[in-house]
Amino acid sequence: DIQMTQSPSSLSASVGDRVTITCRASQSISIYLNWYQQKPGKAPNLLIYAASSLQSGVPSRFSGSGSGTDFTLTISSLQPEDFATYYCQQTYRTPALTFGGGTKVDVK
Amino acid sequence: QVQLQESGPGLVKPSETLSLTCTVSGASISITNYYWGWIRQSPGKGLEWIGSFYYRGNTFYNPSLNSRVTISVDTSKNQFSLRLGSVTAADSAVYYCARNYYGSGHYYMDVWGNGTTVTVSS
Image (cartoon, rainbow over all chains, first blue to last red; front, side, top):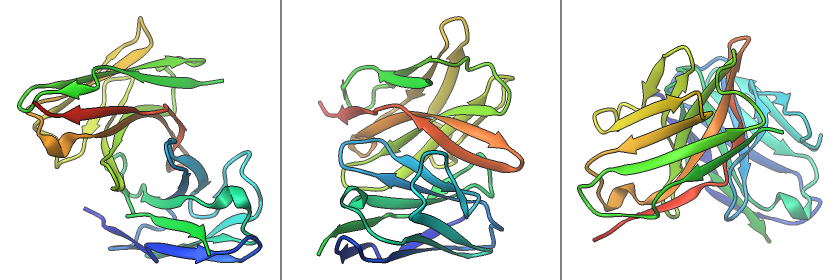
């Protein structure tokens, strides 16, 4: 199995901050990496696919980068609605997908 | 607008079989480029992929659950179902169904149901 490790597991930030979340794969996965946002009591919502492609309807303050084993999700200016938990997901070994453990972004 | 809705018992006894159904509206499950599948999330835990299928008959399961899980499809009702046998408390979770897009070598879950909570307890 391909293991996905996110860091940090949680972070505190303020509105307007630039936030960066990292995801590392246990082996190279090229750009087969997605990012999801999940708010409490809700289903995950796709933000980024193929490492850096923004899903339709997702604000441009979200961006993704990386390839191989190291990936980053960046929120350029954190908004109140962005406080949530973020998950990465590898799709290199489809359909045997695996998710990262999540990064919770809360209010500083 | 594509919508998915999970349904099924919220309480299952240990050692019994968990059965859930996902009803899809706004799109046919028999279309190219889309898999359909199940994901679960245990309380306070992360996301775990359970399995996915393609309407032409390919079905894939998480190896850690493979011996206990079956996904079936009813195209006439535009529904697909999950069965997980021999459940224990560790199978208590929120269960989501989701549409999985597959194209140009990329794969992602672009539409999710709201999720349904299943508790395993006697």
